[in-house]
Length: 416
Image (cartoon, rainbow, N blue to C red; front, side, top):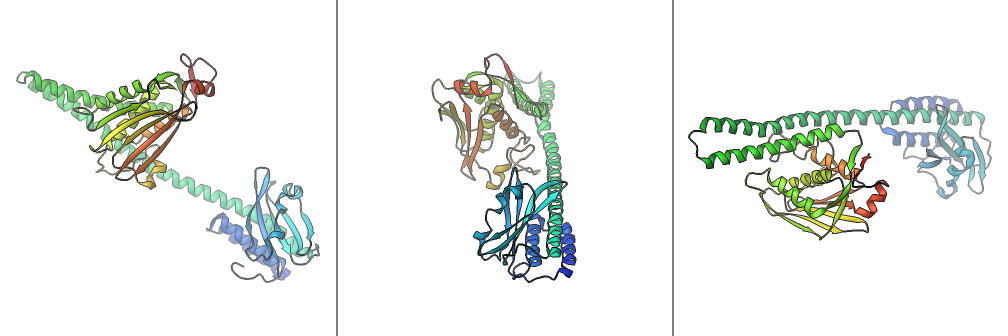
């Protein structure tokens, strides 16, 4: 067995051995890889002293060797068998490998479909194994196919349950976060409105205007949250309808900065610089592009934490592609969180004492809109030094052909 040279198992005990292995295979918690190793070692033991074994599994129209007996003395003699047409077709194969021994290949089937093959190399060049031994190996191959499929389904089920629990936790955190995010601007709006009403007769114009400006800031923040929630919930699982046009990038960036600035009392807390090549345009839905730029700029400003500056840069990249970068000098993102920041409801800090607001849906929506435009998004970040978000977006001429052969300025295009 594992880690020790194979010894021959008498045929009269082989059936018991296979039965025990079959029970172990269907109840093991070691996963598919452990099952495959167990089958290979068991097959070699049943075949006799000096025998070796291997398993190949179906991948599309071909079989690929997954596990080879670690005790094999001449691996080169055991190559290529999985590509033979008879093996792929699920037929039993016997042949001599001159100078090395004889090869027996047994099909592994599940519900009438060939899912793989078990190969056994015996040191003797006699291709006729004892009938009982070959029969036992055939039983092992059949049991192995069933056991590995059961193990695969079990692992899928475990992963699905884990993922569902994780999503349930994330949704619970999200609902708690949204409650807080919605109540914060609502509290400001209602409180300041009541204050204006109570103090209207005694206040001068200046404090009245200050209170109104604070109400406007809170209302714009509330509008941004509601817009994100509505866009994400309505579009979830459906095609996004894009009305494509050639959009001047610099104008779109400056408009997005103005909108984001209106959500902060007194304007942006950090400087925002625009470095876009003159005359640069993108093929995009103007509203959706604005949504992407606002979300990325808002994140960059928010996570700058009042330090440094934010730069939005636009340049020509590859032919037919525009590179848009949003760069900040903020707190950065931990490496382990980068693969998940585009997931729905995920937030790097979802604790009750988190410093920065947000619903956790902004970047998920950004990625969806970006992909709908056949664009890409990538993130480079260093904790404590800042983040660079890079968009590679189709330019007018090339993108018009890739998206759909229509007039992009006038036609709504459903894009998955």
